[in-house]
View 1 (tube, rainbow, N blue to C red):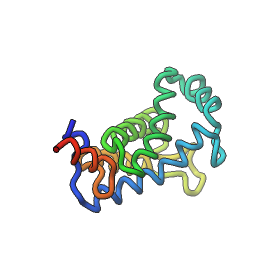
View 2 (cartoon, helix red, strand yellow):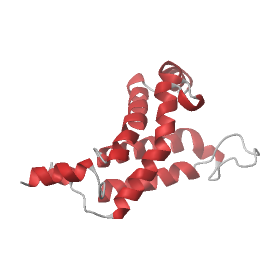
View 3 (cartoon, one colour):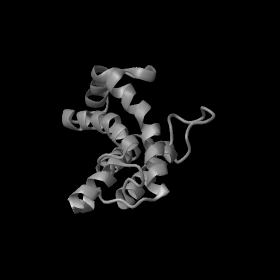
Length: 149
C-alpha cells in the first residue's frame, strides 16, 4: 500500500499531474456535467454505448476516470491509479477512433477526423505519473508518510 502512494518531493510529478489534471478536467466535465459544450452524462452514455458500441460499464468508467481522475490529479490523490486509468482511455481512443486519421490533429480541416498526437501526449504523461507518483504538495505523499509511521 505504501508503494502505491509513495512519492518523492519532486517538481516533476507536481507539474505533470497539474498539467494532466487541468487538461483532462474539461473533457470529464463535458462528459459528466455537459459543461464546455459537452453532451452531459446521458448524452455521453448514449454516444459511447450506442454510437461507439462500448459496454455500459466501460462507458461509465470513462466518464468517472476523466472527471474524478482529473480532480484527483489536481490534488494528488490516487495519482498512479488516475494517471493509469486516463492512459488506458487514451490508448482506447487511439486504437478505436483516431488511428485511421493519422498522427496529426486536424488543424486545417483536410482529414476526416482528429489524429492521435494529443492522445499520445496524454498517454505519455500518464505513464510517467504512474511510475514517479504525484510529486510535491500531494495528498498521496501525505498518506505515504502516515503509512510509514
